[in-house]
Image (cartoon, rainbow, N blue to C red; front, side, top):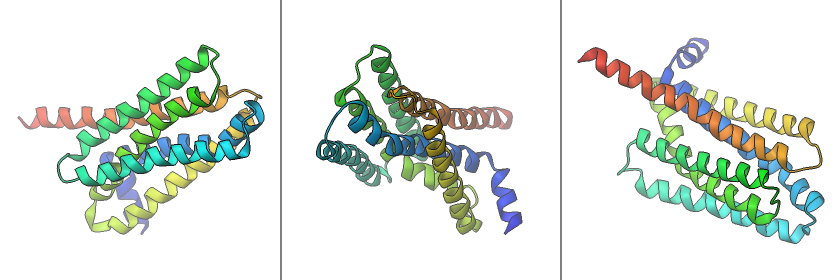
Length: 202
């Protein structure tokens, strides 16, 4: 078992897909843990309104997940991962731009978060498949390690959000946007590694 974990932690494809999904997952948990305080305590929306906001966010994630399932046989994993990454980054940048403008409302937070949710729903199945297929002979070990890393980063994001809370939505916005940008880095490095490997073989 330890040998399997070591092999996975030395595998660029496993690390790239795992770190991407885990970092974005952490950003999602930052939103889940902090959004009740932002919408109800800071912005003054009712608990009922927050429930509807949550439903919209889950709907965006679920819709894109279903779309990913339908497209799974038509789109390669790297292509889908790139599309999902671009979507999450776009949502994060829009959220930061609106926050810098001082426009704090359900629309300026929930709208970009729905874009991010669409990106997460699109890329999550492909990122999981990419991580699992890195070493198919130890797929069970890969699944366990992937789940552990995702939960660990989600827990860390939740803890950090509690420490950074300052009475404004800005810490949550920065955490979410930072997670989307950080998640893109390992996938970018993986693509560069594959290109360099392909050139060396030609």
